[in-house]
Length: 261
Image 1 (cartoon, rainbow, N blue to C red):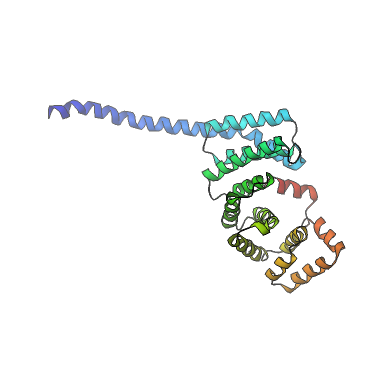
Image 2 (cartoon, rainbow, N blue to C red; image 1 turned 45 degrees about the vertical axis):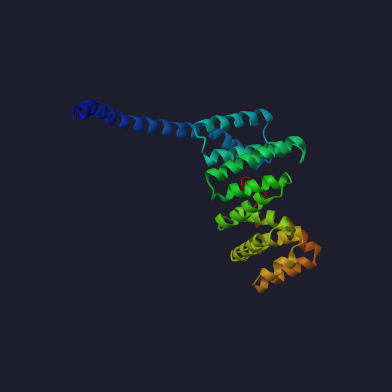
């Protein structure tokens, strides 16, 4: 009885401190989030600028923006968006050099790592999945991780047009190496894609690039689309015209839109 009475003041102190601890923790968390959000503004602006211009402004700018992102990540270490930005940053580092020299390979290895972190923090993010797969493939890494990323990308990004277009290009470029279940996902996605207006033009360019007419034509149901594919297939001139097409958008607008995927 006396022991309980002696503990009651301590309990009252703990109950009084606990709400303050919760408030302090919440305040610090919110402050870190907003500070990290402020730090990433400049790198994201730079990434969009590079996407539209097709090149990095300078190595000095790249290093500065990378450091801004790394600093922001310290305040928000499980932020999938920051991990994604870091991956994109290293992709631009790789693009600034020769295609497959040691520096570009190292940069893409770093890009893959950060894209993988973005997937870890947001497993259903199709954009991160396709970015990881692309970095791995550009580094000539073809493995089960790549196949899983492509498969999950088709699953989670089914209605994301730009992501699906990139997934189709990557997958059909690897067609002979794909497992059968992933091949079926590609076919299913193409059937789904063909329901959208003017999608046949994009798929035709894909068929030209990878000599994939024999696989594509059986998936097409509209007679006019089949006729278009056959005409393009039979004429080198029509092939050149189809490859030059960008769906009616101005070339620079298309580059800005696609490069930022």
